[in-house]
Image 1 (cartoon, rainbow, N blue to C red):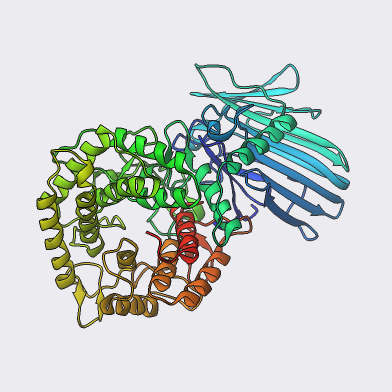
Image 2: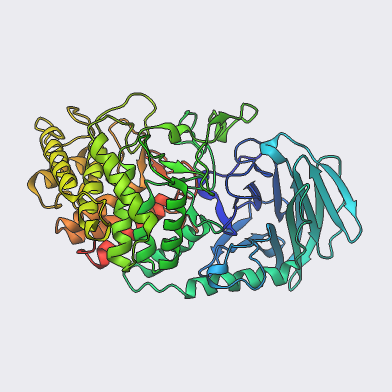
Length: 599
């Protein structure tokens, strides 16, 4: 069996409701058509038997074949050119936009159609389409029925898929549709695959060539409403486009990634479902949207957060929610899937929602402060009540241990980054107090804020290590403390903070710009590398920060996508793909290089 692509080999398609991954070999190996966190109909990235749709020259990957890929500018419409001994052909892939959608209508009513348009460029190239749908994460093999007009209906369980091809006969077999054909220079052949629930509205019918052009226009119209004038504009614009592609448009929630269980270590078990929205990412996402001039996205994200959290009691606020605000994201394992490169288990759901993570209120209140300070927005009643209740919860619980930013699944600890984010929560609440009404308690908040600061400065510093470490009393370094200058807990040029930056750079960094989260971490964490960029710039080492930034961005794949981590030995990308935090880190670091004094 041919070797499957590496994680970094995949391109990302989105209709701002769902996401798909397509390899350079022309195989769509992941698509969850209903929404990002729904069951897949193509899941070969996690198991060879979990379904795919390949559309490529016959014999792709053999000697004499070459592949070139790029996105249409300011879109997630991916064009792949295959050069073969017989000639050249382009395959352009997209998840269709709703016809006529412009600006912030993008993704609101996506038709759930996967478009694939083949264009002959040179010579006559033998092609093959191999359609192997396996809904419900590969549990179902659908019945395949030929229909008048040359379409194929694939129906199983809750899923209906309709495959069409313009001018190419489709002949269904028992479990797959294999369609050999040829394409000559100047010839264009369109395929489309539409999804519909088994007992709902019928699938959309689109003309693939026209729908593809319309999808390009929709993405470009959206991007034209957002202007960024800082440094590294092409990189920032592309990362902002990826973030928009990771946004579930009906609610405004941003998924951490469109995939589940792509491993942090090949053969390891740290394989988690990232198809949800983390409150921890909230403030960083908001800042990235502001930098990339996307204020409407920031406002919609706020509305989703306030609705998802609801009224706040004594229980910890969950760190993540479903895309429509669901709270119970109970985790289970899909034992029938082999996992990416044998990395098991494959998980759906994420039990981190049950953890106490004390940094979450700080992220949320910091984001509210940014909304007001950066965007000039007024705070409605729900936001004011949320800030007051979160601040009260932090004041009462900051002294407790938690699972920390990296969501460890062993023991609770007094993580320095969690305590600092508790300080952030109360510091920003004090600043917002004049706009919070009579229930605000800035005197108490300020008193507890100062207690937290004193505790971090005393117990977070390890004299023997010469740095702030991961948790109180521990000698173990943790790159999460690079966040301290970013949230203005300490200036980057504070002697102890500067020493910490240096120790982390020396002990957790690598010569090629990667930064590990801790000493035994087998891979560099992309976000931490961008945090180090910000720290260096804030410490007055602008040129070193710039050089590091320019080194880290070369770790993106050929179409500018980052996963979560990078293997230290092979340089392979690891973890779920593409990763929102990695692209958020790029945007924010680029802006720090543009304006070192930015908040």
